[in-house]
Image (cartoon, rainbow, N blue to C red; front, side, top):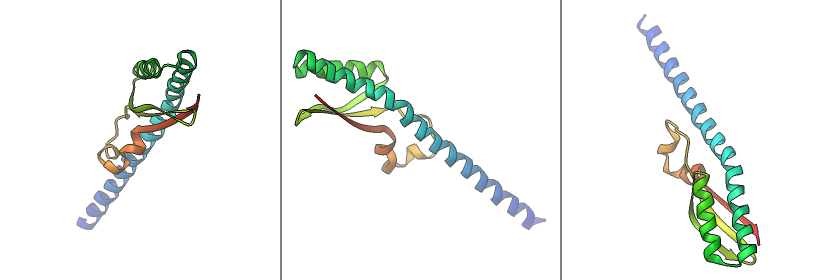
Length: 118
């Protein structure tokens, strides 16, 4: 009887960990998938402002304003190299149980780097 209960406890723990990992991975995938559209809108507005004004200050202001409206944060940028604008955007992560505690996954989980030709 004792062995049977031990086996049931181990199986329950393995199943619970499996469910938690599937939930966390799903949250990561959904977060990045939903953020792609919002990030595209930020870079499009940034490029449009630069094309209209040719002002880096106005472009930066627009990028930060649109990102703020979309619940995003610009970590770096906009930077300009070879007729291209680069932005590093931080997305707010969905609630996870384990993955948000692993620092090595933080950049993959919350950071998106985008660029667009001017």
